[in-house]
Image (cartoon, rainbow, N blue to C red; front, top):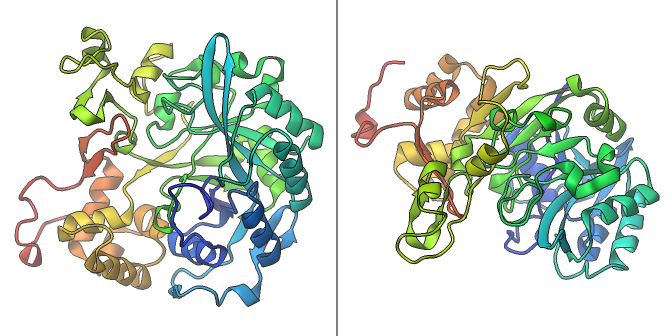
Length: 426
């Protein structure tokens, strides 16, 4: 059984997150996206944890579904083409800021919990170490190794996964505050780390370049701050939809992790080097030639994910290597629609087209990954061509840098022309 899982998102109790991130809305949008297993997120926040306990009930080991009485608390109509059983999973993100090796470290980690009782114990332990009430992703002055030790003392079935591992400012390998290896961060507890999250600005082929990380399975998640961003990245598991099955796939049977759904990494907002305020976007060679300093202001250039991987790599990139698990680079469907229609992704026109397509064809993941081109083209010829180009990697790239998302396009300037009149051969 192949599961599409998104195990890292946020609730409305996290800063800079949509107020629409409620449990019923998450339940509805997960089906629209084609997600089978979705994290509840932010279970360390007391108000959100109370809602989790009230609105969900356990249906199998460590997985939950929304109680029938709460399903009516959403205005979202789920098309019949998308309706499916969707289960919730317990995981959350923690932000750590601490000093180690004469350097301030800012690291984000995902914590997976086997059940609500253990999650409650995690919350009690963390509240003794800092404020978990002001933000759904709490910031704690705790060493990564000490956090892991604390979690293992609560339960050996808790799993910690370093989050978006290459992000410059808040990640285990980040150029600003990170480490050069898992061992440097977790020391004698390193063997308890089994997986790494790629983040939006890298993909498995990029991660493959660091051979010492081969022993870790790669996972991808959306880190969504709004409903529409759910599933922009995800992980595919060939397991039952239970916590023990997912944990076993991550810790032991890596063949059960069938691959990941990824952004084109250039779209991630920390892929290239640069300075956003100066609209300065650079590749690693250019940054080195400038001695890591802006030629305009003298500011330090933010070193991106590509550069950081270059620095630690002992292999050349090889997307076709047998060691690289399958992955699918996608562009979110709303972005494709926005490009074709020449409108913003949140416009009424784009939203209407989005729901028209999923109602006729199926969930977003089905359209992006599994539907045949002829099936899509039967309803929209231009969309069929766009999906074909995306799957082939035939894209036009403007990379992201220093917090600025990149842009991935499928049509060159003027190619669409009079869109209503457009006739293109597949």
